[in-house]
Image 1 (cartoon, rainbow, N blue to C red):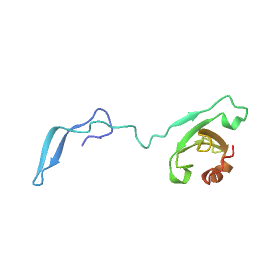
Image 2: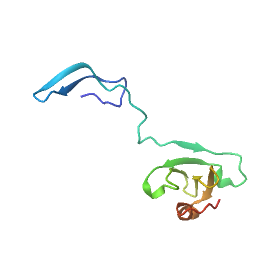
Image 3: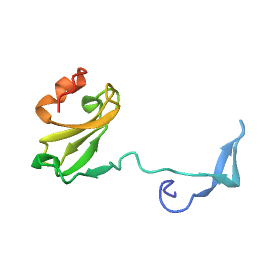
Image 4: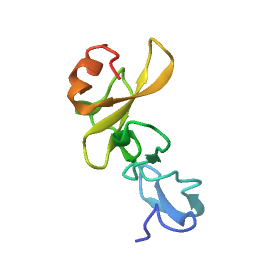
Length: 108
């Protein structure tokens, strides 16, 4: 079968009619979005704190969520970016403060 996430939207799907499968030549995937496995990256620069001048990779696993949102972890694992609800902005911090950020603290 065709990969529903590759190339153009595949057509020609079958539909169950409570008795048998019927080919619907125009039925199929109308649209597919970006892969949920593709993680976004952010590259920061211009900071005096050299650890923040890095590439950060998105982390969406429950263990990393802060304020119900994804974080971005530096490639070397020393810093992370998180959405600060209190200040309505993204903040960067040392990973030593990740547990505190998850608990609602806002150290940077």
